[in-house]
Image 1: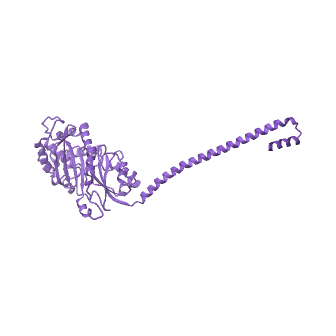
Image 2: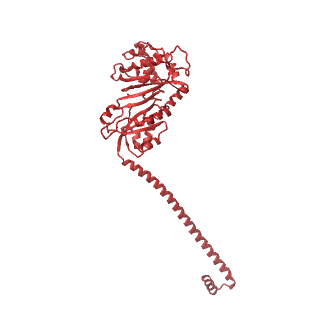
Image 3: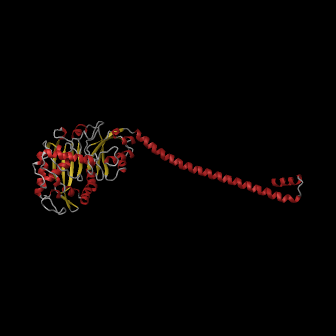
Length: 429
């Protein structure tokens, strides 16, 4: 209606001839259609932008909610009080340069590197505590050397007691490192200083005891009763307090800390695995120095094989320098640590549990069968660490004088310094 009146008005009010009327109407219709199309396009574009904005806001809200949840969880963790605890650890040491972390030396991977990383990722400790372990009062009960495993290692530290703490820590650990137990302890507890004794085992192929003059095939060798009795007789000589300065490095014969107390040491019945006969030597002592156990076993092997006389044991405890061979680290396992004095004082005080792991014994046994024993057996079969070490025994001079040994020791120390060290010990100091 509006178009018709406008067109009629235009027709009567202007001097244009009447034949132009249809052209004007057509032009106005085209302009109107174009205007409507443009408006529709703007509306559609605006609607699309609104939908896109809504979708973006939806995703952003989801991201913000996720970030908020993580922040809330972290804030919740920060509110949790820190408590002193001990963790029962089991691990296979193959591929690691010992237990103790080497700060500033990332090329040597240690068990503690993986443990601290898992503690941070699980939210048990703040990230800056991982950079400085003193902040969480961290202490290991015993150091273990390169390649050495553990079935009952204990570490003490302060953590946030988050829910499902063991599961969350283990989720960030490789399968060959497990946390098997946790207990609350007193605020001043130190796993190294409060430990009364440590029990180690050493698994070795029995052909290590075959006499050097006998040509034996490793897989066919079986330990006879007489040789086993002699091995146990020699191992029993270590019981009591002796000066073990010859069984470690950097300890002089008059250093009081070189004296160590051994409670028991024996070799168990042999058994066959993968067609090779093995036996396990067990030793319990108040504390051990670096390489002490491996040298104690190395010297007994040297005697049984006929490279050294039995009298060398008495000589090794005197002030004279004696060449004591060090057995491979592969078979050494930290079995258990003992806290008798702590248990008597705090184990039944109503606030703390005794540091005993009876309920975890089955898990320990399963871990050893799954990770520790197969590693020792397979590595021995593949790399022949014991067989290769036995070939070095003739190089040792078990009858050198003290002066000769001091000269050799200086040369050996220079060579060792030139080669460098991984800085880890296999036993607690």
